[in-house]
Length: 229
Image 1 (cartoon, rainbow, N blue to C red):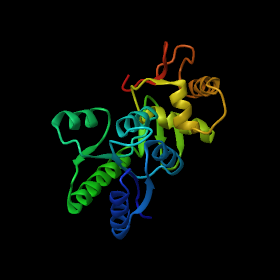
Image 2 (image 1 turned 90 degrees about the horizontal axis):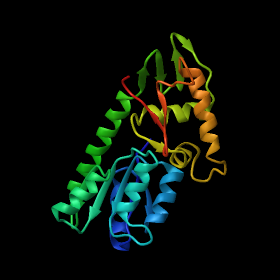
Image 3 (image 1 turned 90 degrees about the vertical axis):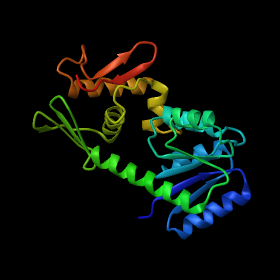
């Protein structure tokens, strides 16, 4: 299956050119002309990579990166910007972008950077195909959880929440962020749902659910998975 690339760019001529050339390279392309539309398409399609302009209507590119990373998305993001100052590049990379390309850019360089980012992403995914902590092992591809040699019964949503925690170890998430990342932006449940699911995971994974070793409560924030303890 072809990799899917989301292009978020408000210049119609650049957007059309990118769409055409990426399709010629065999990619599936999704196009958005402002940050808000880009977020909607990302959440609906979960692309393999994002090409993102900085100066966008409605929600700018920097805020789009912040929002995606806050939701736990680890998809490669390449910023395309007319701003070529070092400070601008540092800002883009520091908030979570994976690469920064200054306009105007050459198509061969852009394609090379896309291929490199996708390779890194695939290597990262392969390393995380199986994750362990304590006496627990997760097989992310088979969606299996084994504790002390015994496979645990997990609902699909329990597994998704646990996977989100362990693949973002030591990051504190609010209940709202967890709700968006695991249940989706269109889910109509309350944040109390997150509390209930965390309690269920603690019952299955913790030696003492009342004194959790792995799934910590972060006061005033939400929850965090503690790695390496």
